[in-house]
Length: 397
Image 1 (cartoon, rainbow, N blue to C red):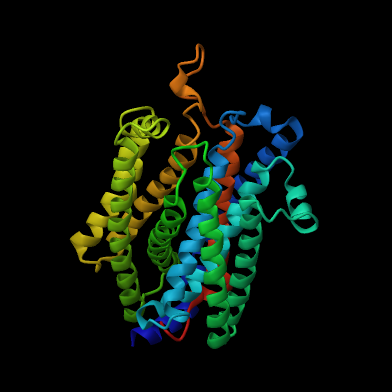
Image 2: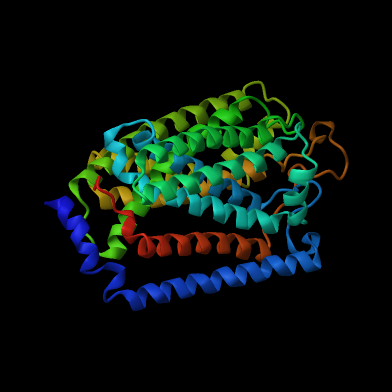
């Protein structure tokens, strides 16, 4: 009966009913913020990044790069979580497939929009990626693999909409392979930088994949709950059970990331290795301590994990609140990862006169507005998807 209601209710209310005015207002507001952010990005191109952004030669990656990492990590996580059902055949995860795949597309497109304005000459990347490939460059592989990943995800979503689940599963598998390759390569962009001790090592590619799935679980729970709330629909029991399964997987991944983080800190503090030790101390009791303890630990890990345990993965509203907190905390994780890895000067151990112990960085208004436009653009895509694809309903729920 619930499954029938889930299909009937879209015709009786939701975004196409009395809430259309509110829906259009929200779309308009987010569209305004997106246009303003794009205008700031275009302005930065004209006046020069060195004048518009807070990045420097010593700290070349800033807030916008962190936002890009956040979006593509979330996209890969959504792809991996959704693939558990319709690619690998686990029935409990099948009802979340359509919305999750669509969100994977929306988040990576939003990430591309942010990185477009972060790169000083973005058109050169598109042209020279094809006519002058550098196979020894991790960043070249990152752009190429994420392009292939987006292509497969688009085809997969189209096939899901057409009801061709077998072919969609095949494209989904290609999307998973390209997504894992792209995402582990993104970790290698950081991990293979020998001069950045905080990042260097084989830990990064593995951490990126695991944390991506954690991000995907939080995003799946929150946006499925939000989608049904804004549409005014009743969620079927099958979909509720699917989200409970996602929450249980998320709880496991929170523990794994806590384990990873603990041992990363132990390795970075033991023996006080140059570069690493100072970076970790900046997180523990330095200028990034509030980010780490309140953002990464509390919001990103402990609170959502505790909520899932407290409600035994049954109260979807409580889990959605925990997932929202987790999404905020995960963004702080990406910001800290990018910035803290750069703020320790390369020759700090030599005690050079005039060399700061920690390099300064503060995002400018341009960076904040472009980053905000990425989030509002993602919100627009989500809202449009709810209307255009009628809540991504399927025969599974």
